[in-house]
Length: 611
View 1 (spheres, rainbow, N blue to C red):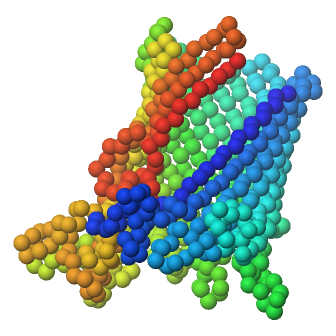
View 2 (cartoon, rainbow, N blue to C red; view 1 turned 45 degrees about the vertical axis):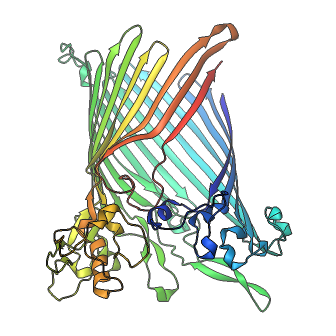
């Protein structure tokens, strides 16, 4: 019997507002943000100081307890009973404190406008997995059969309260001291999952392998008529390096061919989505609390299915100092659980259905692992991987007649953008020009003929681990080849809003600068504003966003202190997102959204003790 226990506690105090966007668009000639005494500058009530948002805070505390037990018992010489069980409890509490000081003092507000809110969400989950396993060896034949089941339950309980108006901000954390108190909804949701599965492994002469699995999964997220789904897979492998005609090749130490085919399912949707659901109305009618509908029912949707095929070749050279693998995969997803767009007249924006679309994901994956140096004091290992993924919408019945035709194209990836074709800036007029494909003198969705793929062409990483005696240096470079939105997506007509813009946009058209990349600014001009909108939605707003990033780096020192029974003491310093090489102009090449904080560069120091 093996048991493990894990307890963690976390506390965070964060601003409620991402200042990134505000720092980008704040006018260069805006007043100073702080007064000389360090207080916020409101410029005599004429300036909305963006740093006032820092007066409002968001706090949360999390406590997590995880208990696991693995029990196995030998019933006979070949029959084992196993039981895996686990319990997870998560307590989450969050607060939002909004003092009146986030507002301009010119408004004359007091703590009577301050507010405080608190919410709790508690999650309890447990899982039980009983299994029977039978192992048998007959000469060169080995059999390993297993049957088992899984039962899992997750229950969420949440509630909230809010207080508005305090005699003093010193009492703002005590909602009971508020002049007005609001009690939010108390919500309880329960998710149950049940599965029965079996697996048969067969091997002959430790060279030929066959694996067959089958399972029946049930989820409380589906109605009774579709609650269960059947899935399975078959796989095989051949270690050809053990064949007599290969063993004479001294440079080849390992060779394996493997392949598998199977069907998996997904119930990754919200709880009770197959029911008509209601919520408590915050407003009273005739002094009574009412309900209002929040979701339409659909009792006919079912498990989402993905058919997966994979084939791979694994090789080892020079006594496994060099190992490599080449794999191909082909996954087809059907019956995707998505929200179908509904007319607003229905009162609901979407209805959960199984999409008739067929989506295919294929790709090649390559890995290379090398032991470059192995000596008494020095070791150096390198791991390299690269993936070439492809995504395609294979079929979608009724696509052209539906609203989804604006986003998807048969034979193209899902993550595409339809854009206008940018022809350039007319040096005579100083105006942007675009291709009017249907020659009707208008620009609308019918002229968005260009298709831009925002999926990566390839991605991968290279990791090195270098050790000298007790010191170890590890670092990982991550790279990606892709297109993404560039700074042209931020373009607005100069002078229309009082926004700061990228310095490149100061290079705009004038009679003395006819070949500038940006249009001249004409304030409050409908034609110019429309051209600016077309420019943001054109292919000129998408460009190469490839990058190489030093994702992780760490240095550590390990020592043993046997006198005090310390088996290992490891001290380490590590960093993340340390360095990026890219020609991309924008916040960060990894994300398409502008105005949000990019991945942080972080450093951490720690110790690991084993005794």
